[in-house]
Image (tube, rainbow, N blue to C red; front, side, top):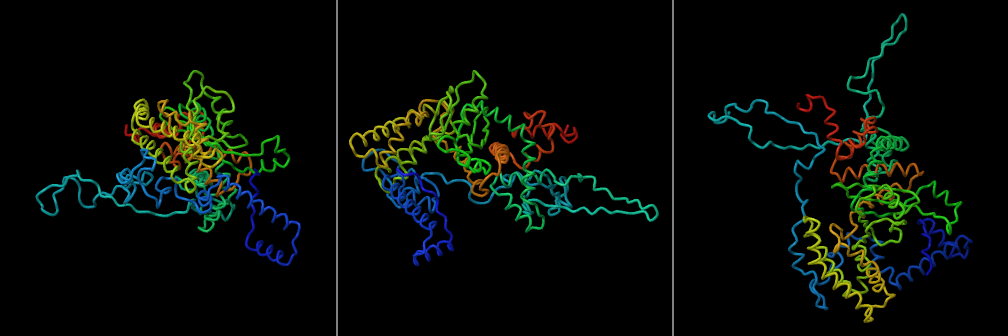
Length: 540
């Protein structure tokens, strides 16, 4: 099997010029090389389709996109109900009885946690006053307050110009300048402006060059190089907290992780001097969510190390004597730890399911059976969401265990009874499941073991969004800045705190953060801020 060919990129003008030279039989050596490359791409694509590695359904999804891999999208336009095999499956009533998802309609005022609240007292009346209408009763305050929400727009970064008056003595020439207002620090960049620069790129995927254009159009120009410099300063303020988060994340009882490719220009330049057959030329970002002491810590590691190597470096910081952690990842060969550690490996059931989803058009009846069986398993998991770990385990053993046993027997039957060719797409999907069956079904044996790695998959999308919009990091230092800021931002988000407020607080208490990072974690910093207030502001 040939390796995947290089991407051929031609704009409309280049394609037109190539076509014209082809029609006139005036092809250059570069044109011939390009045409061969196009034919190689077509040949590779045909081979992938024939071997079932790339179905028409998956190709269509890659080109046009698809909302989700939900059962509703997979079976859109097909009949619901039992399979011809007679096996128990997801029924039509199961879909109809689903409760309506929340989030539709108006938002309550309590959702606007970042909004400023201003109390508006009545200008003429107060509690205890006589009723101006009937004149007999008295007013009291035991009534729910009225709510009015007003939205105001601002540029991401605003600027204020202070024109200080200067006076010169006509005799001696000495100049006297008015001071800035007492509440204005004589610093060019406020901490809040730096937080915006950090959040825009590393939190929400808005590149600094795009922020530069936006700011310039709004009359407050901020160059992309300055925006990175400001973000770098935020990372420097939060480095002590990031280092503590890494240490805490290593102690997690359950660690989800996955990785994706990135581009670091300095390493790409370095690759020109490397032998790809002997030295690694790839670059990766590993996203980790570690569950420890009831908290979810998000961590990012970028560079040449892949997920299996990064998880080893993390576990090397683990305190001796703790119970073995649960390590949840997909079945990629890059994910298992590259060094022996006392840990329990889990694999993502959703990834096993995805291998079948891609074959829906080729094996509709068989795929429907697999999807319906797993739908019941996931339904059971949703029902056990609020149970304790032991109770959830018993619930899954009773209700999901028989379903998984039946699925395992069905997979073996497909191969042994020659219903599926081992080298076909269906045979390979079955082989993927059977090879990893022990790791895929740990939720039937271990309290608290999850079914899937969806939580890390969602987190890794933040890296993909960043890569899609910003394309690359210039240097390894730039990648490290990204790791620090993304870890701080997304850990704060998972703690349901305000990342803008948090990053700003870290900057305004830089020395305290460095001395005692434990007091400035996303879930402890508010209490620390309150302890620093004067007694009269604490309500003491």
